[in-house]
Image (tube, rainbow, N blue to C red; front, side):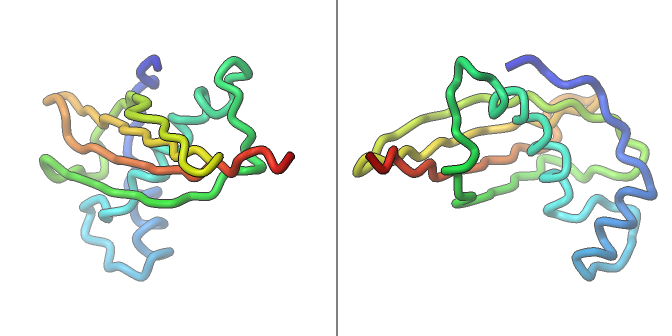
Length: 122
């Protein structure tokens, strides 16, 4: 998938996210903050009619984050989503996505998302 346009991590958005999850606002990006960027980055895949994902049959299964360096308010990042695998198990699919989050220095973080897509009930 194409890389997103750069997004600046604003102090306001970092503060709001930290407060929403009950963390002190230190200026550092909270560990799970990147979901607010990586999920919208995957919308292009999710909304692609050729991909054929029926969002009504999707359950979020797992989320994993790996930070290679700290991100802070003011940093500009891009997201690149890759489909790592699609496995069919008992008629349902497990969709694994990896999102690379890059800043001016290169790869800053990686986010893995696993979605369970229920099979057709017919």
